[in-house]
View 1 (cartoon, rainbow, N blue to C red):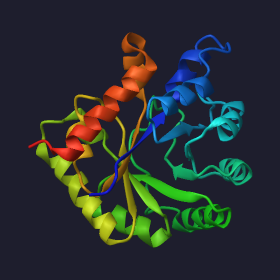
View 2: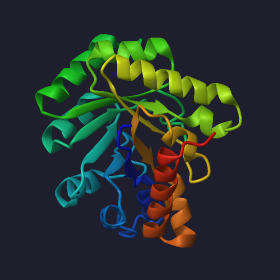
View 3: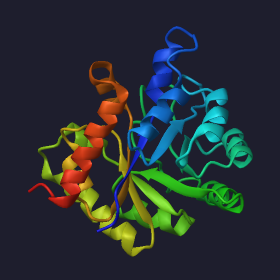
View 4: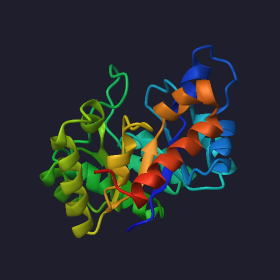
Length: 244
């Protein structure tokens, strides 16, 4: 079974800071604490509206991190230029709408395919690993491979909203198998918590989870390091003894 990595999304540390437009809490300090607590990598989403993570944050993260840095971003000329300059380990292309509270669904890879293919080619030319945040739909998985991505990140929001409905989980399992058969690395994330991560962590093809909001929320009560360790333990237990 593939090793399962935990990437911590530190966006909402920045959300708390931006509530007062001050200098604390510091997302970079939070990221380093997550690394110390066992995170395998750090994720941050530099949104076009800069609602949480700022340009200075990604600059500092790129220099300070000891683990791989996954930069989430929209497929725009501005963001591609930033990625080419900073050269994070990985870029995950995600959809963005100004009015949304958080990312509501996967990237529509059936539209603007020439633009997406060109963006992936640019990132690869800069030696940046590429991932596409997508819904667990067979045609979308197939198109992601055709576009030349290294990996996909399966949107787990439907499963997180309806954890007792077998259909979203079955779709994730099928998409993971399909992606692996097509040569794609399989990641997953969105809405995952200590309570619901087990069945997703148990999918053998999934090799990376991106989790942020629930860890930052839990950190209010238990501390950031403890919340990272709790998630790590929940993932590892599920991986060794998959939930029925």
